Length: 348
Image 1 (cartoon, rainbow, N blue to C red):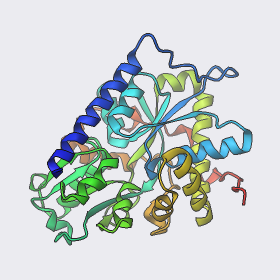
Image 2 (spheres, rainbow, N blue to C red):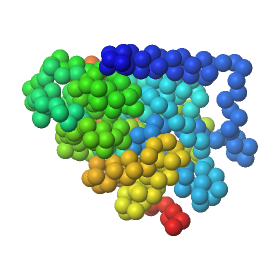
Image 3 (cartoon, one colour):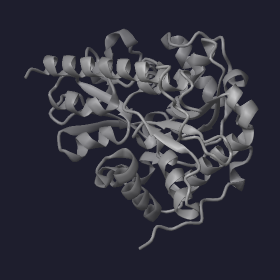
Image 4 (cartoon, one colour):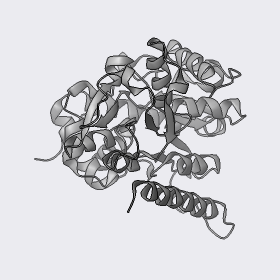
């Protein structure tokens, strides 16, 4: 089977998946509220994709479940951004991890979305094939690079690093691709480079055909890809529940970064129970190097988002009509120094 046919089949599969999800979410004969808690009347469904940018979601759920017998919310796994976005906009999700520029673009489009916390810092890698002649960023001229989404910060990374070297975006070809499909595309040389949140990039490294061109921590320190977002109506009607969710995510991040032992524990239970990935892949990503992805310093800083705004406008994916006060609510964690990690250890 040719690489072009493989890519075509992947695209057709993605379209079919989105269509099925759309019909399911909007069917009047289905009750999507069956998982609501009988005690509180509200049980948040939180969307996530199996990337390390979203790891605090399963960590929070798992630890809370182990400590109290109830995870406190329902984590909903998605394979790609179109499906997750559709579920959030339809009201199927009360909260979701989402690409930062996508959340900002949705606000520009009139969606009453609020970013309440970050998902991570760094955690993205640009990979090329091990046999590639691409040795530096300048060598990307004329190459095809897969990015997760038009509104991904990975697209803005490319804009940023090329601009710093005087290279126009027109010098490369960007194609959108679900992160789980990227390793196969690189393996068969359907694209020249791939960039996404981990662990899909590390998969190519572990399997022996991928080579790191750069880690985002080295070209855009403290990089933000994904954020935790809710709608304004959810905050207005269920602020205590939103606060509890953010508190748990914050404690989970502190727990992850407290020790390498915690990261290895998370690799086991998140890989097996939530991501449906081999734990060894998450162990690799969370340790090589240890700062490949970080889960502290996750409060909302206006300057970080203003830089994303500026780049988004220059890159043509943002209009500049929504600003920090419009799409962000930093009130849920005012001082991260006061956040303490979960006091929990996995049974030996």
